[in-house]
Length: 213
Image (cartoon, rainbow, N blue to C red):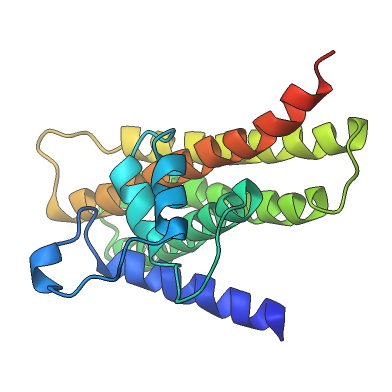
């Protein structure tokens, strides 16, 4: 039941992030909750990421009354789950577009199809990284633990590379509205994945530091 509730919270988190802008308008929400310890912890953690505002916005959505979030592993787990849901959302859109372009035999089909393949890879890599992070939580400090850490870092880095590869295939000049929409969605995947990787590095650093003589 606990796993189901946690998964439901992550789904709601992702939906809220998708429906909100990177920099939410606080004017539309005049009554903001008091800045909790969890919020302060998230803000401090997100300073190590490349897109701190996006990081704070997505992770702080997860905060509920009387909830304590002060674990680097928990933050990394949530951040990776957000990345996965974003990638799945982008993949669903790109898949729909690719099917439509294929039926129309449009010249843009090949570029979109290539991007779809890369997003599929990102989804697969992020899925594996989340599973591996859960296994990591059950491992004892030792060579096996650092092997799990290396796996997560490799898979998340690969997912990030795949997302940026798709973005690079969509040039900025003379781009159709369709390509611009795809680029925006995939770029967002890359940004949240970059943040997730930074937060995972922060989590893993404590074990690396302990290993040093």
